[in-house]
Image (cartoon, rainbow, N blue to C red; front, top):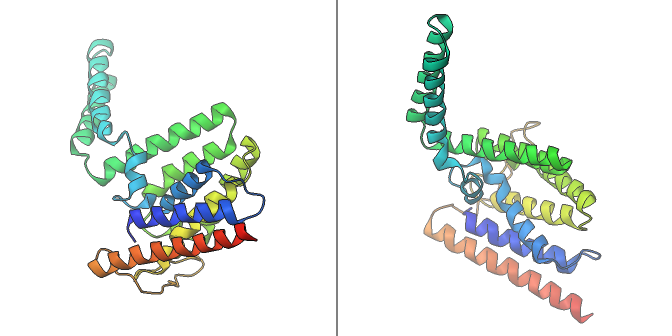
Length: 246
């Protein structure tokens, strides 16, 4: 399913959580969190919306390798005397330069997300927010997995919800776990409607649960995605109106 459809379904799920679950405050931030969470499983895909947004440093990764190579070469030339260490320094500089020059596409994206995730981990350690460090680890690891593997499982859903639970306890923002978990699981349910399906219980079993209604990328599939979003939104709206009128 397309990222725009996942986002729409996630935001609608956020609205449902805010208005239909007792005790959860109506919060635009919570609804936005559900939308964010609905895109999180596709961090393992190079073309996903969230992958591109979080990998903000992607265009600078190659230049970072080149800069490191140049700095290492200068340090070696001016600071190290002739001998094995000097040769090793120039060899390392050459290696960094070649990696930077050859790096492109998905490898750059993965390194950019790794950098983003590790920065988040450090921020979590500095602020003593465990949930922030766990979020950073998720962002760091997810890009290095194959598409629709472990990020598309019930275990990843539980982990993401638990991160929300820890954030709830740290920030005192009631409902974070519900917004986060609801948005995340909405992605898996939507992907279950595609021909590829989802391996919910991987690695315990490779059984793929699917109701092959949508052929992602096709004209008919795109139209069906729009219809599902509209139908889901209409259902939630009816339920909300019914709740408010009671």
